[in-house]
Image (tube, rainbow, N blue to C red; front, side, top):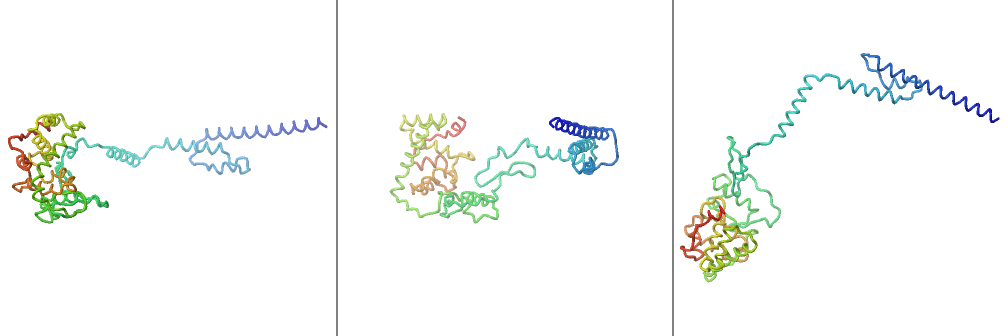
Length: 321
């Protein structure tokens, strides 16, 4: 009985081997036929798979081979003139997008507050009034002008100055040609500076300037020449107030360096002191004796009650140091 079972298993094994071998031979024959035969029409891979073996089972090897043949034919297919021109144009667009300007005339052009640099038709740098100011939602960005008017931002004040300076349509009037910021925040009622307070203010101002100069020297935030002036003021009391006055005046004479300090350039010392020193605004106004909206070194010294002989204009040395 066992012998019969073994014989039956052996016969089944031989039959399965013959069937598998027959399928392998058919597959090899089919591949040889595909690689040696050329035709002008493409065969349907799905139809080939369905006819192979007659059982509807897809031949994965045939599908992969068809894809490889189609891809190879696509690579060998010559590119048409229109397609080649499209590719060339795309390459030129990439090159144009990556172009970097060799020289920007505005790179070294300094424009004051409320102005931006733009190129003219000739390609030259020119400072024009800023067209629009950003909307400021934070009330802390509001500023109070010297006309006791609250503005939405400092940008709006500088923009108005520029419009009036160039006599553009946006200007509200002649008085806004010299509008400047008094302090940050909404305008508030400031107490009046009494005669006694005004008389004592120059001394307090001189003392404040010297203390600021000394603090900067201690923090090593002064240039060597400024530091030399501060050390001289420490040891020579006759130079204490004058050196501090010259240092601050030269420091305020920013852009342009025209040997005078405008009302706008006084902002760094006026705005921070408004909340603490209500006399700062009338004091600085009194320094501009001829009311030309500029303070010379001579006017600055007289306002601080410093002898004119003790003042020496050293701004060029300070800037070049």
